[in-house]
Length: 322
Ligand SMILES: N[C@@H](CCC(=O)N[C@@H](CS)C(=O)NCC(=O)O)C(=O)O
Image (tube, rainbow, N blue to C red; front, side, top):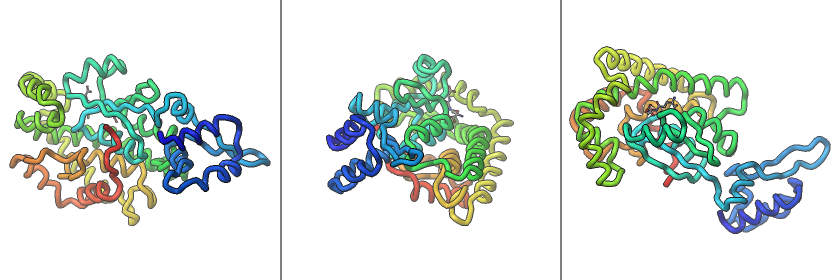
């Protein structure tokens, strides 16, 4: 946190401030240190309307925590690097420009630490102010509440309901189907699987993981529905989802209204493993084997995949996580 931002938070915390006096004191500060814009953008202060009087400015819970702890926010994302639900959570954090720590787990060894943290084993898990939040939809919801700037929920109630419905449908039905078809390919080649899952992990961890993969792979396959019947069903569902996506995108280029919302975030993140993307959080390993090149080629000409790639170019910021 910059000294000026800390000074602003302490000033607001000192006694109730009206919006007008806050603007007089802070809006005119040096434009290279936009403390007011930083504070509102990160959801550290809020403006509250008063009946018959000037609106007042006060600290949010995150603002109080930031002032007490000296950090902008205390956000820690437990994740798999390769997973699309985890990508959805990363994208939400990056969209809002929230610095966060990323703790990358490997499928299998993740179970013990994630169970100890949450009582279940799925990631993503976001630890926010010492509280674990499980599931990409709940993570988006809590971020939206705590950091309202760069909203992912449409302001209009009907549009919000539509966007949340798209999220629910894709989370429940499309995410699992995409995962099944992708794992069906990855599991054919354990060296490549190790590359996909563990290439950014320290070398010793990667080597140990590769040695365990012959035992882990059948369990990973089972957990992700990789058997001939389920893979065929999932492939059909993926095709439907691509066609549905092409129908859902409005002439604005977005799924609901003209702005990027939780609907675009969900659809693009959950279809991302089908596209050969460049973004550092979702790019495949530099050398893609023949069967994966064929896999990508199967989907590449679909308009929905072109749309996913365009969302990554236009709306996927650089990672804010370390
Ligand atoms: N609906 C959940 C799905 C999360 C999910 O399925 N996570 C998978 C990875 S893609 C996972 O953690 N699998 C390991 C496990 O269940 O132990 C969300 O939106 O976050």
